[in-house]
Length: 242
Image (cartoon, rainbow, N blue to C red):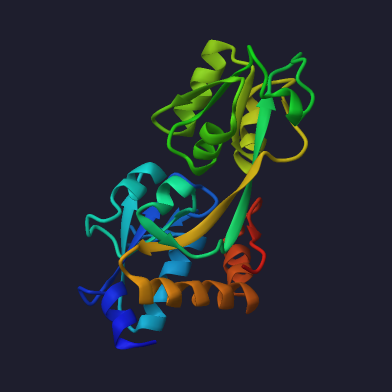
């Protein structure tokens, strides 16, 4: 820890941590004072502890809104899925944990495997602005990708209402969603894994280097695994070393 790192990460004397509330794996509850609890808030609190400053959570209902606030001075670190579009403004660490993205198809669907999804005539519905949706926007070439604003619940409602062919999401969420759609199936495998990382403004070069080392130590020491166990999260795994 150097004065330069501390000045970049806590210029106001408080670590302002941007937290995405829509990821139920990373934010699993709320403390008595209203602060979010979960793996992401615990990681942010540990960064603040290492800096020797209090933590202040700056919450966003969707990851896209957190990312859009980069460079505005609203937060000092942001805990969010690392994606190339976001990396234009945010310096990300390697991932500290990963979440698999997969596809759900309704009962009777002729689609039985991942390779059959990206084909002409297939309509995929997903949540606008999510890290896995950004991946789909870059990689889906032949199918029709329909992104729905308003969060996962809005996207799911649209999938049902439109009788679409495929619903794309995170595997843990799909496991819950499938309960409401008899006969639906989640395809084997994954189309990507959301890399949950810690980011700071690109101008904070010293801070970015320090955060990268912090994340690697947190994975190696078992700290990330400890937070996953403490918050009883299923479907979240510790990311491999950078």
